[in-house]
Length: 68
Image 1 (tube, rainbow, N blue to C red):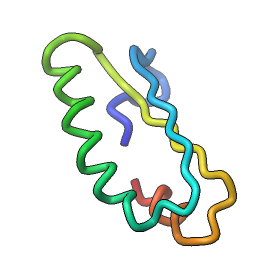
Image 2: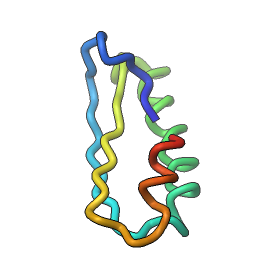
Image 3: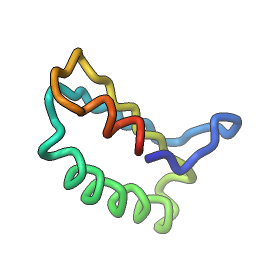
Image 4: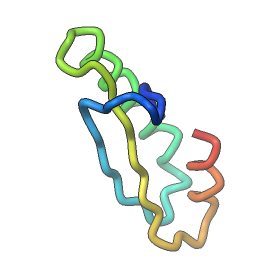
């Protein structure tokens, strides 16, 4: 979930701690992305990044994060 490329400056960073979130991660991503995209569309931010920090999940959270 990253609306900016690494070479671009980022206006908004969202840091999300994750631990065993496989059950809710798809819904979380589906709800967060439109909100962040709306901030860009409204001119509130030019770009954003989402930094998901996995804290040793025992489920497939890291695999799901790698797909996002």
